[in-house]
Structures are given as C-alpha cells and as structure tokens.
Length: 210
Image 1 (tube, one colour):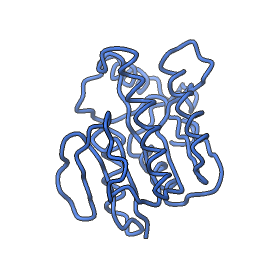
Image 2 (image 1 turned 90 degrees about the vertical axis):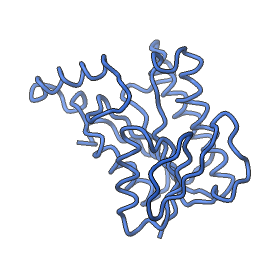
Image 3 (image 1 turned 180 degrees about the horizontal axis):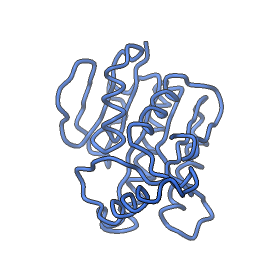
Image 4 (image 1 turned 180 degrees about the vertical axis):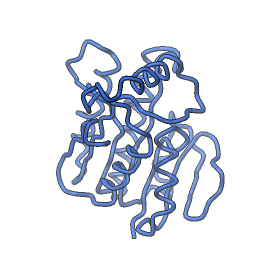
C-alpha cells in the first residue's frame, strides 16, 4: 500500500489523478494540500495551505511518492514572475520538503517542448523545473510531457481551448506527439509512475501518453 501526495488536485489533470488514486486499492491514502478545501472523501487528507508559506514539519509530509500537477498560465497568474512561482518555485519546494520527509518517487506533469535553452518563457520554465527536480535526489523521477490537454476546465483558457478544438478536427493528420492527450490518460501515467517508483529519471513524451 502506498501513501501519495498530490499537489494541484483541483486542476484538470490533478482532479483525474485524485479520482484514480482514491479508487486504486494500491493507494492507502492521498495527501492533497490545496488552498481551498476539496470535497471530503475516504482516504483523502486535505490540508489547506498557503504555497507561499508551506509548513516545514507538518505531520502529513511523510509519503512514499509525490505527483505534481501544479500549473497556470501567464494570463491567469498576471505576470511572468507570478507564473514562475506556480510552475517552478512551488513544485520545487514541495519536492524538497517531501524528499526530506522520506518520499522516494516524484512524478511531474511538465509540457511538450520543455527546454532550459528555449526562447519561449513557458517552455524554458518547464525545462528549469525539470532540471532542478533532478538535483533534489529522488531515486525515481518521472517527467511527463503532454502537448495539448483534452478535458473540461473550470478555469477559462480560451486560446488553449481553441487550439484543442482545431487539433481535434485535424487529429488524424497530425503526428502523434501533436495530438490532443485526454487528461485522464496523463493522470493514469502519472499515477502509475508514482506507484511503480522505477529507479532513475524517466521522460514520457506526449506520443507515449495516448
């Protein structure tokens, strides 16, 4: 039986991870720290936190593995600096604290094109969090890199939704790596990576998620 931590549980991919993890008999409990409370469910521990001031020694930190689906957009965040905090700084602090308390596996929902040398701020940020997570020292680290993500978002992302809709129309003509990946498929791969905790650093490209 595994004890998992899930950060980003209220988002599109995170909500699917939460649903799948709670239904999985291999999972004993899910610790999902969030800013606002989630619906209470069996096996779910849901501390309300401020990600700017995470408690260093809370009794819910000791878990076997962490799944991170935290993410936003620059439009929603309001600035590049605010975006960087959500997509880089917060995941990295969670990774350090969970590792310090014994977690041995970490699975990150990253993005297609993640690259520290990218001229695109979004892709460069994703590349930097991937690089910095490798320095934390997890015995097992999985970096999942979806392209466009399919599913219903509670938070409006009009340009992203337009891209998803167009891609679906021409999906049969697109290379697999550029096809829309259903959120539940990404969640499945994140959960399986966390549970398997295979030693080493593993990268799952978008085409491997379909």
